[in-house]
Amino acid sequence: MMAAPLSVVSTDVGIDDALALLFLNHFGRPPVDCIVATGGNVRAELVANNCAFLRDEFGLRADLYAGTDPAPAAGRAEATDVHGEWGLGPFRAPTAHLPPLRALIERLEADERPLDLLVLGPATDAALLLRRPALVASTRRVLLMAGVFAEHGGRMGNVTPFAEFNAYADPEAAWEVMRSGAPCRLVPLDATEGRLYREEELLEGAGTGRRARLVADLVRHAHRAHVKLGQGDGMFMHDIVAAAVWVGLIEADWRTASVREVVATGPRRGMIVEGAGGVPVEYACRFDAEHFLALWREVVAAL
Image 1 (cartoon, one colour):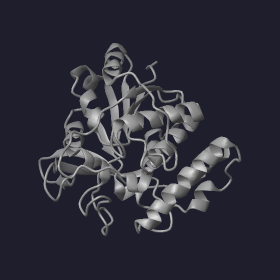
Image 2 (tube, one colour):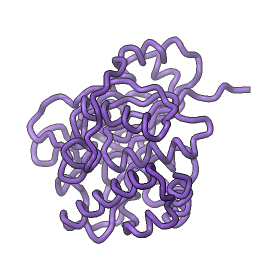
Image 3 (cartoon, one colour):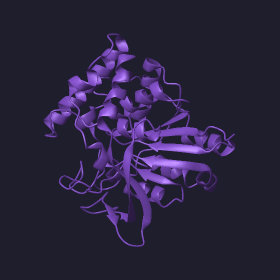
């Protein structure tokens, strides 16, 4: 019988990242083994604090590791306009000190189980892991919440007209992961922006305890930010949808693209360029939005 994979989530917590970790903690069978605090929505040191806060407040069972900020570059972005100054809306998490990424690399190289990798932020740390040939060879799958293919026409990027935030924040790393040789899929905006969820939908049936109130504050903060930014009366559940796809709880429709590059510089930074002879990459173009909502309500009801 094949051993259960060792599951690793790289995340730049972030409100929707935080909700994705709570989703995985509720449904994960087995639970996530390791979480890497990657910089993106806010700096990596703040993401580490946020991961530890979620572990302590919600009983996350994963081991936590300090991650890396994307390399400074022209056009580098943080998403404090959506997630707040510290990444978790109104909450400023206490300072936490996590083991370094090299400790995770040593652990993974010593473990004989196959690796499952979910990337909910910039691919910075995923690329560092997959520079190790032994880890590429042991990787069963990588799922990136990243990119946009304009599958449905209309709006493309959510940080520029051409680029989704995670791909924009570290295009070199996203492209490196796609070319690493590890089996790679993407959940891009083409899928995650298929449904805008209203605050009352997301909080329907929520519990009344401390944990439920914390989640309600996060949802309300994100909802207000989406409205202020002109994205509609609701919020997209980008990372939570990717997490649900990763653990196989919702169905997605998949297409294959031939990717020639992820643009690293200039006004089209972060754009995924397709063309003949590129790297074949599967991406989700839609998902079962109502089934996802039912699953999410199971999470909030249990808080």
